[in-house]
Length: 384
Image 1 (cartoon, helix red, strand yellow):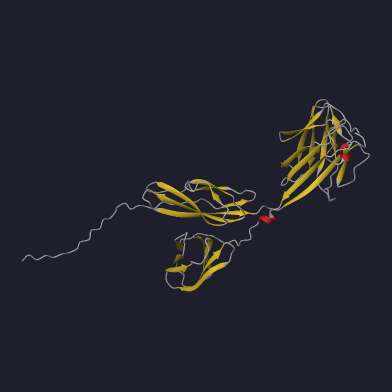
Image 2 (image 1 turned 60 degrees about the horizontal axis):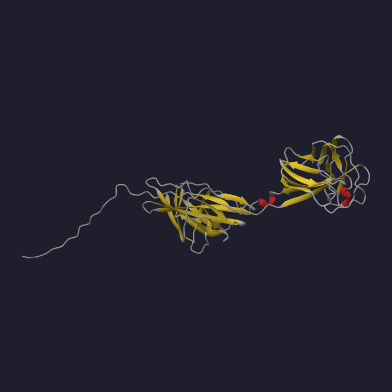
């Protein structure tokens, strides 16, 4: 009588609609070439199937420390101050049930490709008193219409395919042997092609469509009341030609069309003038823009599941196939160097392998699995 007994009961409450974590998508990998030093990070392809994403956080996983993320809590943001190297950025997204997932993307910044610069110097004259120094070409521009030059030489004496056609000229008067000048050698200012036409053209031919060109035009006459405007692609540069010994018209970064560039020469006053010009040709080499990293296949397959990815200290690898036998597993860095390797026998259809990687620096790695003649490679990322 009056006894007491106890018992426990367990109540389990099941959620019939468990939350599905969001899917983070940091966007595709990018390759930049200096001097480009900024880009956009876009995580708008992230989504949540059963709710909404309430937060985005961008962070840098690895790479040079110069990078600056403008707004790390926005789906779209910019990153600047990039220098040569490989950067890995992580995007973490959180849904309205506070579940979160991560995704990473890589920005590879290549060095500025090497360039080769060549110069063509052209002096217009009337057939006497040429200027034969410092690599100048002497173009006898005597004639009236469509005056065509021979192929010019580069200033180092080597041959070029470049030539010119002057649409119209009324003569080449002599400013005098002692005319002088500092904008170019005084001898180049001695003779000048003149015209009373409102406009005429100088067409430079035989150019490299892949190169960029710069020009400096000289225009001077021992008269008063005239100006000459040089126009390329709608951009005009005015030279006051009256006894001009210091001014020139300079253009940069011009791309040829069908191997040529046309310059309009327009007058203000009675005459337009042109005494000579210097052409600068800049060719960018693509050979210096190749990555020294080993190219690895990154074919994705469900035969291999690595998690978590990104990981911090250890990586769990599950291999699902019918292969049995010797197997090699390697973690390879972005330069193709094996940083960690295992060799073991696969004895079951679904085999789980745990790889410790605490000592590896953060960054992008390639998980490479060799099974007989078959190789599977998957990109993974180690966080700090």
